[in-house]
Length: 221
Length: 295
Image 1 (tube, one colour):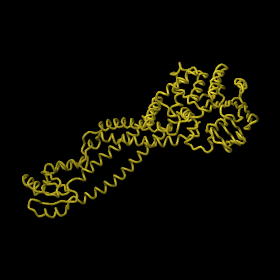
Image 2 (image 1 turned 30 degrees about the vertical axis):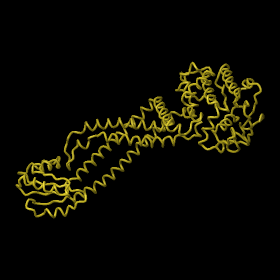
Image 3 (image 1 turned 90 degrees about the horizontal axis):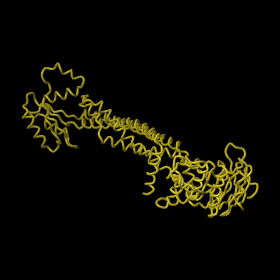
Image 4 (image 1 turned 135 degrees about the vertical axis):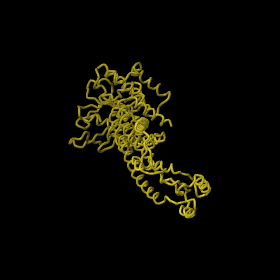
């Protein structure tokens, strides 16, 4: 599902590389924790995987597609196959919960009767169907993150990336969000969760843990 | 078709979500389009007036003093039957003096000292395109009921030259004003993109294509521009109506005619506004949205 080969990422004006000689192979269906201190390169690595950044050198492959060779017009197609969850939710605050989740289907050209039924199914799964008409900005942090999870999963992507998904949440909300991510894994999705919170690592039995430090993989590769 | 419908729906949705932005865009575009509309109206009315002037008689036959009106009518009837003549009109002495008075405009006091009416009655001919005015003039010279034959060619040529120069200058100024409106639309779209950054990041994240993001902005700009054109037309119409008291101007023009605002001008303005909206919208989103910078 994911293959990184000798990947490096350098930003102009910064001496130390964000990533250096990273080799990583994640087979389909695996659950991977990407850990390491702040500034280790976890977010950079995730951004490479949904083509928000291009590597300075090396090869990044997702689902067989070489992202370095991807044309600009092919990037949206890739992103519809990758669900992404962020620490800061990245919701459209002025739109309803329903509209935020529906957006992921609309951009993929899914409209008509299919759209409301799939959004409803997803919102029921994350326990937010009753608040479907509420504006996203009016929800609590935990609820907003559940909307973000619903949006990431409604398109049934084979790959789910989560960048510090519980970083802004209380322990109870964090457990609920992790339960939803685990449920997606149970349905066959490959999952990569970046976190520096050791408490999260114990929540998923048998998960693979990959450690990053100063842009290099220390172990677990 | 379905994708197009979706773009209209999204454009409408994002317009409803940003009433403040719509207010700013409509106000500034209305002012800019009112300036363009006022200019366009004056330009079209002047063109029409110039055309009317240049389409004046190709040949004027001055009749002898004291020629009876019936003689003028007979001559007009005879000449009107000629194939080279498109239209013929008899202008009696009183009408000729009234016309001169109008053409003098504010200087018509010059006529107050006149004893009697020195102007002759005339028969004015407008010739068909291609007719040889000199041949006809030659055949009419020497007839007893015609005192003088005046061809309008030399002054007409001068007027046409002046008209061509003014048309070119007028068009250049019009293009500049239009470019100003396009630039204003471009900046309005860029402001909208800036204000909706959060939304654009999300769209980019979930896999929206460039077209999915861009078209609603272009359509929004077109809708704003057309709505502003309607408001601007109303504004110019009202303003010109206030200013347009009938007042004769030199060259037989009238202020009321020059300031008249027709629905056709409004339609042209709406068309120009839609074009400016499309151009400015495309340019604005093209410059403001660079995909890899968003996520």
